[in-house]
Image (cartoon, rainbow, N blue to C red; front, side, top):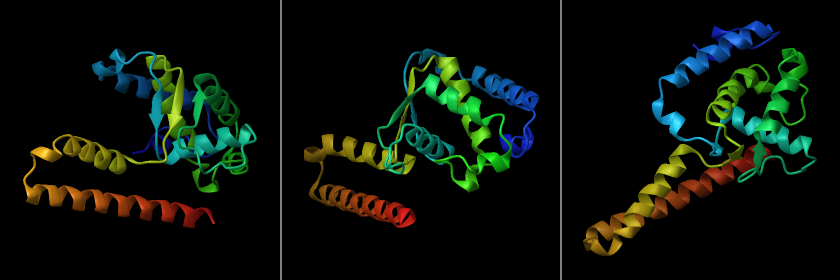
Length: 184
């Protein structure tokens, strides 16, 4: 069950439900001891509500190109200010926020709560947005690891490595084309 459903965060929001959702999120964070060893580091964001946050942040700053946000960053204060503005809005009001997709108006509150609680928990100074996804990151790490060992590979393994890099390049270009097609 999503946070929106579990804590009634999709439409007109009762502020006590936000508090209950935060308590639940923080209780889950408490079970992750490694999290607390990563204090004062930025949070890297990708996907979903995070893209919406980047678009809202860029729109608020008057940046015209809201869909090209790779590397864009926001301070915790800016993220909190955006959240404070939208937490009191109805779903209908959120549907008209510049930079927020109408289809995300029902989930933006529940999408930002884990981020804000994470930032407060680890004292993160800012968030940095990535247009890449987890798959691209895994591919990049695999290629990086393999590239270090390239000259230790047999000729067949080298060929497999080159095929993998070509496949990754093709997939990344296709994803970029899909992103551009959606923007147009």
